[in-house]
Amino acid sequence: MTLMKDDQISSNKIIDASISFARMHCKEFTPQARKNKGQFFTPKKVATFMADLFEIRNEKLQILDPGAGTGILLSAVCDRIFEQDISYNIQIDAYENDESLIPFLKNTLELSNKKLSKKGHKLSFKIFNSNFILEDKFSTNPNQPEITKKNQYDLVISNPPYYKIDINSPESRKLKDFVFGQPNIYSFFMISAMQLLKDEGQFIFIIPRSFCSGLYFGKIRDWFVKNTQIEFIHCFESRLKIFEDNVTQETVIFKGNKTKPDKKQSVKISISEDKSFTNSFSFMAKNKMVFERKSTESFIRIPHCEKDLKIIQEIDTWDNSLKSLGMEISTGKVVDFRTKENLIYNFEGKNGVPLLWMHNLNDGSIDWPSNKYSKPQGILLNEQTKHQVIPVDNYILLKRFTSKNQKRRLYATPLLKSNFPEYSSIGLENHLNYIHGVKKPISIFDLFGITALFNTSFYDIYYRSFSGNTQVNANEIRNISLPTSDKITAIGKLVENKKYKSNKDLDIHIGKILNFNEALLEIVQNY
Ligand SMILES: C[S@@+](CC[C@H](N)C(=O)[O-])C[C@H]1O[C@@H](n2cnc3c(N)ncnc32)[C@H](O)[C@@H]1O
Image (cartoon, rainbow, N blue to C red):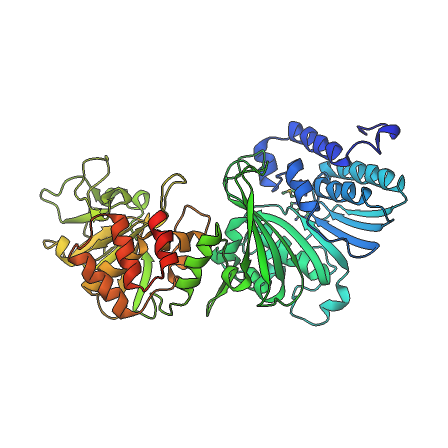
């Protein structure tokens, strides 16, 4: 299987061999079979970029790659070490549970060994053909002090597998302290690997951006925010082009140290469109701009540029949230395919109420009934549907899904009690979120004020730093900072009296109400 002759080893990159091995493997197994095992091999440029990120601090280096595949990341590390002038002693532990990949992995590491020895470096490696999470060599709770005895690696480099995992699986049971909702194996790899890293050890992960804000990763994310200093984040903005297979996720690379975070430190953020690092640029952001600790949860925010930082800094000074204003956000209760028999196209002779879908929200107003789409216009009122409808009241409706090429992520529309005077209840389809009052209905001015705020360019910037996802999650909206009640009321009055000429003009008026300085108003003006 060796792809290189002995005399070619010094001049060739080992990563080229490991990439060829990955291609051979991909020819043998269907994309679906690989997807089921969480196999997405790292492209060469990305692996080299990751391997270039760590600092070589000692002459002896213990390295862990959990989920090593054909050894693409490890070969990138070895290719880098080869270039160093002083001699290094490298010890690698590679975990890979797919037996069919082990010969490739072994070959990559043997080639690395040969190559490194030509320059006087030493490499020893162990391959564990086992389940990295269940391997019984570490405690499951990194908060336990005895874990420090087990810490052994200077560097963890990993492109962990990605697949959902059953809540009752042995893996979930082992990491039960970190499970909330639907777990994904990649976050288990992250937390497990961190337990094996030395204090001050370095980690480099390539992972889906959903880790930064997704509800289900909250406990593991919180651990990272409290126990590590992430120094560098690279964000690939393209959702399709990082891995060969169709991975429809924005992807990020984290590089950090296992150490208590220092508030005064900054994080380098770099952004590129795709895996060839097209149009790449970078900037520095203070820790507090990126790692946000709300009362119940931590978030990792990725601003897109320095201007975004100014907007985030301003909005972060506002203390209100939906909860403090007496509001909550919920998801529309009508799931069309579960209640098909109750959905109606016309109301004649039927006891039905309006049903609103995403397409009924049109440029800030409700377009109902609408004949543009062949969707049911209403839902029958009966025993089955009485918990699917809600009273007609004042609500702020938010689309839950947007497409990548839509300009904004947040699309808010006010629903007024007076919009539907003939009905006492209404159905909201499941692709809509709605904000409602908890103890009393939302006042007209709060309704118009918050709707207008969510539709501004600056809330779009702020919201995008939380989430790279085109889905708008209720949890993220719950954690959005809002200004004081009197400012919201003032914005609400401005909107009700329609004292603005265009959406941009409205944004600037709102910025002025919020006492934005010249620099912020300029950002709004130029958005
Ligand atoms: C996303 S791939 C990355 C492979 C390689 N590190 C790379 O960067 O190209 C993740 C690898 O983890 C392996 N894997 C999946 N579940 C595993 C488990 N529970 N324990 C060990 N390896 C696992 C898969 O077979 C796959 O090779």
